[in-house]
Image 1 (cartoon, one colour):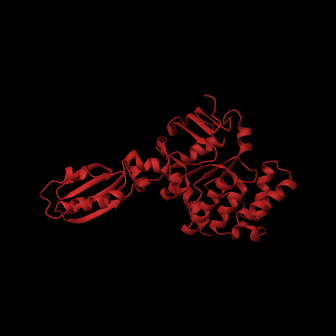
Image 2 (spheres, one colour; image 1 turned 45 degrees about the horizontal axis):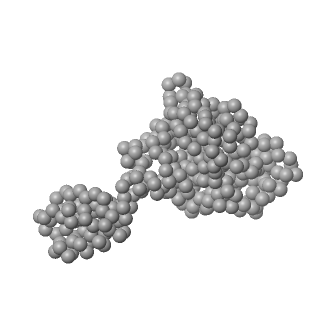
Length: 338
């Protein structure tokens, strides 16, 4: 692996994981994560997201390839990697028989943090995630949102430089999900933390991530900012119909500003524009001047679901989940609903 650039916190080259010599969960992936960014792995359950995280946090050993976090090799310098990272797993891991404070202190003990230091940090973290009034309450009395906030506090006890979040809002209601997004944004803004998160929620990736890697069947198919990924589709889509469409107006529309492509289907036109909000009124005005009456017009902005369809050939909603991921989700959802 070449020398890591100063702004690259995670560098992955050729990382592969094969289970039982037959199932390739992660297939020769390459990417890097920059310092202070929120980097997202977007894909359906079973795509290889969690396996990738497990390799990066040194829980699962790669079959081949390599990765470095803050210059430390995940296979050869696991202790250094674990000391520098925090993890918020997909499943709820807090001991339900312990209080919030006791759970955080337990995590601190596992990191070998001295008690006089860990108590102060625990109180700071409880304040951060707004659980101070509940520090002495047993976790089995917590709601799903409270449990997720506690998991976040536990993942921050060692003051990590890189925080891994595996499906951080799975099973949460919309209001709690948005609150969790705000915590994630705060960690980046106030602490300059680098965050690596996996998700299959399109709106979550769009709202949180500076860059997104779409992963499918263990392979990364594209990487870019949300805007770059949407722009790669070629622009906004304008659907247009005119009255008495005997005359082909394709050439007229093509000469309008920002129009990149026009396709005709009888009386309907599909127009691709680099700036649909500017182009739509210009089209209406141009057609009016030439005696054409617009009977229908719609403007569609590219979405991440359309990006996913473009690069994988299917919608996120069409992907079947693996049996193991379904079981894992059910456990998490059951606990979150308490």
